[in-house]
Length: 433
Image (cartoon, rainbow, N blue to C red; front, side, top):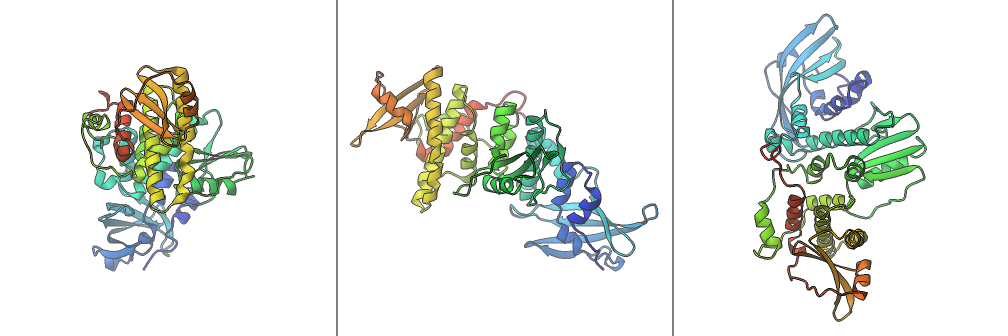
């Protein structure tokens, strides 16, 4: 015998008032697995093999108890799953599922007071990196839960002057409801990718005076970006940087880099030798994580030499990625050449702020004569073509500076890691975590 209506939607009908984190935890449960369990007492203690989404689960009915106070039966289920692969979360947990005597689902909850995913989230937000097991951490369920939690936290802090409420009908996956709302004055939604955020913003037009869609990562191909009046789309990294001083930057970067913990970093001295050209290194292909991090970094304001170095390294990553993609036959990636406008802005900032240890000049590229912009930051030369600011430098050049000859694009990911390490050096309070 199977229970009826074992779905997240059924649970939400009577539990919509729960805190958002609790709703998100429930949404990520393998509901189709619970729906297939035979709860007949004859199956007690015998594992049931259930396959869902290509993943095998073993579910054992361990106990059945009548609850006279509630008029329901409570079924204790042991769910086990190896969780192999990004899409599958591992389980070796007990759950209680309650139902009426005629087999209609009532509720479902973890048998422990604190669900393992919630425990992991507490370690994550506490930045207790050594308390996190990477084997169970790097899954799609963890990513979805942490991303939603970060998005909600950043939005609440950034819009703290506006009374916001969490919407019970918001979904981690799909749906049309906003994550947060202030009546019909403001709707704030969230999607992981920019394309989906734009779609949600357009579909929400007119439902509130102002519609804000937040996202983590830029979609890496061309899509429709025009938005109606009253709607806006913004990267969470940008909102955090401009409104909150980058308070959540390390957490956001962990999500952007596919749940790569901040402790998983190369040796800084070794990176510096490579970037300075003292040590040869093999070609380092740009990964999706590098691109996500770089595109997010280029949305930040620049106000220091460390930030300048980090953003220039990010520009090198984007430049290397575009060239690689176009060689593979993806010409649409050229839209990301807009990063050169950001390099122009960075050069303008250097010319005005004149930070120590930073030099700016341009050279004519032979035989075309096209100018190349150079930015030297502590003996490391960043160079970019087709930057408008370079023509101004070339016309008024007085310095006698020459490129040091170290090509950064072939080692772009290493340059990014090096610049990140200089910008965010470990402190005594975090090094041991």
